[in-house]
Length: 329
Ligand SMILES: NC(=O)c1ccc[n+]([C@@H]2O[C@H](COP(=O)([O-])OP(=O)(O)OC[C@H]3O[C@@H](n4cnc5c(N)ncnc54)[C@H](OP(=O)(O)O)[C@@H]3O)[C@@H](O)[C@H]2O)c1
Image (tube, rainbow, N blue to C red; front, side, top):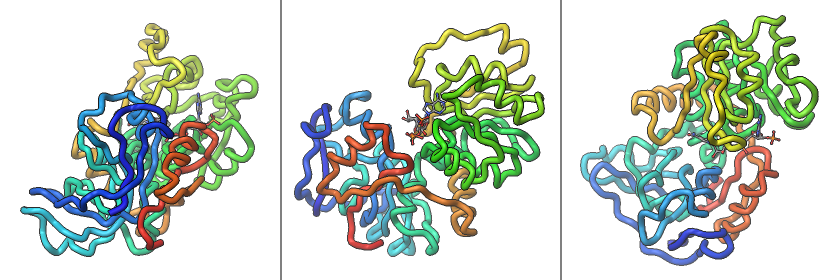
């Protein structure tokens, strides 16, 4: 089978290879998936570059994807053969990602993909949608609340806007351009604020009539903290899934304490299994109802995986990057 892999960490062009590998066999509790689309996330390029030790002599990259189950391992019902599935976090602490014509994954990470959704769209869901769900619901229902989604046109942010609207919240999204504002509005945002221009906190507060927001789904905890501390209501919560701008920020502890703020760092890999299952259940329901839109910002064939990684690293692609592996749409 065709597959991409790396055997040491480093820049994409230096370490990524595409070639032939034996088709893997599913072990107990695993399914084998004929991969049609592989979903690329920032975590994949960071891992390849060396943010985590290799762990295995050879790694087939990419945590997310979509395809069709073609074989099951011991303990998995044979009825799953032929099922269309989307895959998430399948390469976490494993050597088998989705950048290959076949992969083997734990059965519970292969989630039913409704027929109304293409494999390329299914490959977008994984990490972005599940992370968004966790950030929104880890601290209870959001019906009737006001949720600020920072980076509302990002892969996670765009799903967060949609999931928050579905759950009955008023949504304010921060963006950096008119084009990104349009994407956030299309996803359901009630208000958008360009966080690059003017007093961001004042603009967010204005959207709420001065009341502030109940929840923040945050793409950069450290960089956004001064704004978050100003706009969050008493007893509000900040669920952050990255802190790239300031990995070890100084905390205005007493200002946050005065508001009884909940700070919730979120990492998809280690979030509770029950929360993962809640997320996939809700996401399937929304997909099936045709209520989730997906933004594919760029597509590359498997042979051009190096360019796909470089595009992810450039930060210039708005939306998900999909690598086409199999022949189906
Ligand atoms: N903890 C987890 O489990 C988890 C899960 C998924 C992703 N992540 C991490 O989260 C980050 C984003 O992932 P992604 O896939 O959503 O990336 P993405 O598609 O590139 O989206 C990031 C978005 O955030 C915006 N942005 C950047 N800095 C911002 C700021 N200070 N305030 C508001 N918006 C800002 C970017 O646009 P502009 O620069 O134009 O504003 C972009 O739209 C990555 O570092 C990724 O590794 C973590």
